Amino acid sequence: MLKRTLIGLLRSHEQTGDRAKDPVLKSHFYKLSKEKAWEEVVSTLKKMQGYKVLHEVQSVGEIVLEKRTMTGRTMDITVSVISVNPVTAAVDIYSASRGSLGDLGSNYRVIIDIYRTLDKKLAAVKVNS
Image (cartoon, rainbow, N blue to C red; front, top):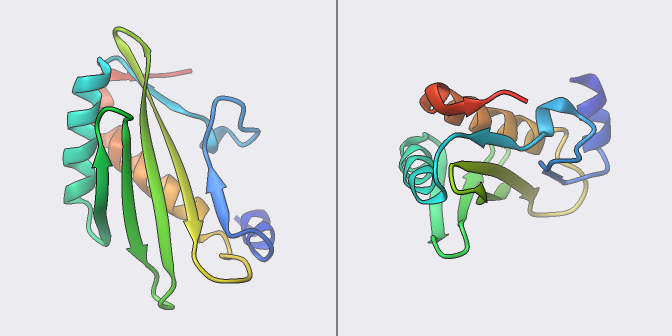
């Protein structure tokens, strides 16, 4: 966590993906079609406290959220639901803080929070990699 805070002094964004070096930032896969995964992810994100859904585009598979930090900064979060094959969907997250300087690792913690909530809701269909 200290490493993330130090990286956060300079960087004000974080993202997940297949090739992420940090295992926490790897894409999460679920044994659901893209449409079913979309419904589950959107309903879960709308129920999360502290997050406001600004925009959702099902055809592209993107949900745009906003979160305000305790210090008053605003974070923009994009959650992407991607079809890997007809029965598997992946969820990736990009989080960025508005303003200058770094985020002290808050984008990293937001990604962990969203993934933890999604994994809890979709535990039965999560694919462990």
